[in-house]
Length: 111
DNA sequence: CGCAGTCTAGCAC
DNA sequence: GTGCTAGACTGCG
Image 1 (cartoon, chains in turn orange, red, cyan):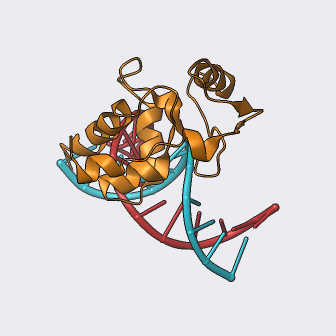
Image 2 (tube, rainbow, N blue to C red; image 1 turned 45 degrees about the vertical axis):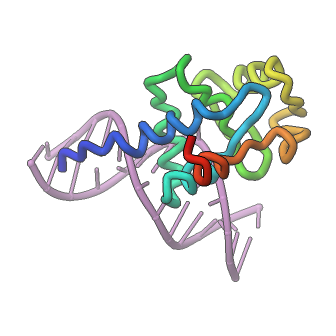
């Protein structure tokens, strides 16, 4: 069905780009911000992430506080996050709640 | 701990 | 062009 649906993915990347350094977000937050429940679709879009350096897909983690996955490898994702100031133990974020970033502001302020 | 739900992208026919 | 499968998740039992 030739779905010219670039809105979903584009929005995903757009939201992700709004995530500041030293902060992380969850797939749910993105899906929720997009107004959908396709957490997996978000991860899928990020896996194919055409905006690799443009979109910090490594700043996206699971809602459980785990890293989740990464096209280049979980370890790489962790190292990148740690460099940004995020503390990670094994495959889980320590200050997850503290490093977690929400798209609330963009929904209210719509910057 | 395991199953079901939800959406998009890619491959096959 | 249409249909089916897979995938970086989440919530409930």
